[in-house]
Length: 611
Image (tube, rainbow, N blue to C red; front, side, top):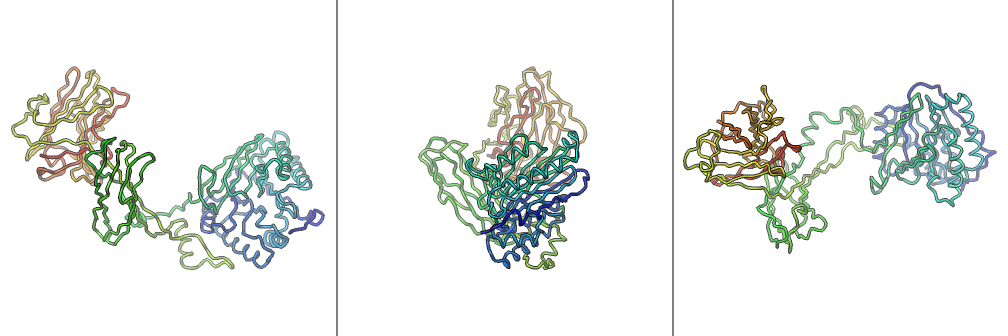
């Protein structure tokens, strides 16, 4: 237990002054206590990347809580090693872990100087005050003598300026214990109520504390109060204030201030990812996919086997974790619900899962599968030059062993969603069709129909047939005001979707990734493109088409050679393609309508099956 008295230590109190010099940027750390050294050391480097004018930490810098001076000195050496990545002046605030014993306070004074037990300093238009809530036996207190010191400090600072000049200044107060949050009957809370009444008479902008390992803000009498935590959160709960962060503050010459709480792990060096990383790290990515199923009948009994293909494209064996997620209130059982899977290099494995339910849940309660794998890779949290020094053991600081993570295990995951695609059977043409735009039903009588709308009575109807040379399509687009049809697209890459148009999407391999587009507006202007990864993806189509605009609808007929769909030959009987059709109607509030899922999401296209 410490036994200190004011008469013995009053000469330790100083005010440190520096001249004003424009905007000031500073950073505030909360408690660390060696609770999570890798995280804190990374945060120190993150702070250094912002080049602050100085850094303050609001106490509990080390673990402390010992009478062993040798251990305390070793801990401070270790802590200063953690700060070695910092390139700015540093100001400590004493916390209970730092000064709770006589020996701890003595060693703290050896390390930082006795003046750093209670002090203030100026920078730019700001005045910064460090209070001590753990002075001697005065634990969690700001006793009358310290309050007197505070009044004198504020008075001395303010006396330098006129009332108008003072209004452009900013005062900041730092303390370890957030006494303003303590119970009302706590003596420290009573102390703070007096302190608060002192502070509100001056241009105090912010008071920051630590100690309780949380992030909590409140505002009182024009003063912002913040409790902050920097490292060592055991169980993160972002919205509950349990997360590691530091505070970045800008103090402007006119007295205005900007604050930003920066979550740990949010700042990276410029060279964090290079072209090699871009390839090597991404090779483990798991693309999101849909698992196509034939039906899902809400309310009916379910007993269905769902097959999932897990593909490993790498030239190494990979382990995958498969986890089905069943939403709340979804009465469904899946066997197995989770499993590990080993997939050999450059191969795939088909896994089967049994779905059962007495009452099939609705579509919006469909379960989904999370597929994940892990890989060890560089974190990229340090610049490459600095990282090389760490890897080559060139960081030699007495009493300090670097803890910052240069490599880590990363989890790669992808979501596989169940999807019941709309389907259309495409029959083989037995006669001949004249491409004249008239869409005579008799010509298309053998073709199945696709009909869709945008939730209103403005329908789009499509029929499809094929033969050995061509794919034939006919579409009728309802339009009550055909005299308002818009067709302005032009140039080498005409943006027909800004007009009234019809849009065809083909994913002939059901890749759920690549597609070919054939668009045409109501004036016959065409937009065509191959898969996105093709260098010269825009091309001149060879298909025949004809448009007729009637009073209340317009029609179009297509005769599309297989080459326009990037094929040498047509489909075989039984082949299935992923396909979608969309329409833009400029007269509508919601201009886009479509047959299936999303026009630019091939995972949710419909299926066309060739008979």
